[in-house]
Image (cartoon, rainbow, N blue to C red; front, side):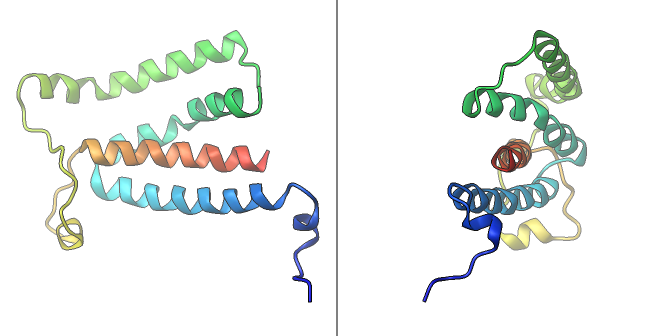
Length: 142
């Protein structure tokens, strides 16, 4: 007996992008929550919200989109503004100030109510991953 699929998934070439979109959605949600639990909220917001940069890059790479010059300039300005938001953290790290670069060692350590969430490189990378996975989801939908 043949499996019954929704009519949109029966069309040739639709099943793989739909499955990938599902996986990218799960990865986006996981990274989103993890980023807020492992880095400062301000860092997470900035790094997740630069996701149009990833959308432009993925579109050029996989869909042969042409990036207009004005869009490239806008992306460069956005990245520069995001960099300015991280400048105090970078300068503080250069002066030898304490910056927590370690990921939580256990779930108990991560979920302690008295735990102060400081900026971590691990959390920052997870926040970038959230934006990247979100744009990969949108790419699959295109």
